[in-house]
Length: 113
Length: 111
Image (spheres, chains in turn yellow, orange):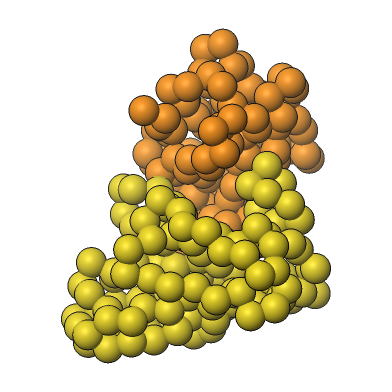
């Protein structure tokens, strides 16, 4: 049982380049989330999808877009990468809302130069 | 402002010790609190979830307590092992529908 799978694991971008981070879960969860983790700041919510077909902004959505492709997949897109977006990105899923236990992927380490 | 603080930021102990990790939160209007473990280069693994109506939860050598009135939760690890070495994070789900993470306690258990 794979759980939450993220690709790629590592990525280096130049300022202004674009890329999409992929996330898929095989637990039939309704809700999916994108977080970023920065030293000394804890995890911060970028976007979430409470159910298939819906997406909402989190705490730090600027510079990002998301797509809930189907129940399994939730992608995060950086249209024009900036050095401030250098971070570790985590995808998570849960059965219901944030009140339910979260299941995390192993993360994508992104560096923007 | 709703904040979650974890003290200490880092902890190094010899194998076999019983230890306590602390999590404090500024707003007592919480729905639940979760404890996670994060290994280097990995995602977070959920350890325990305590509902606001509960006082503690146990799983194996782990016991988490919750005191809403004082804004504190503790994670107790009994008979620590080198395999327990990781970063431990707490996250508080507030009634405002916000999940706030602490910055974690980095634990090293040496043989």
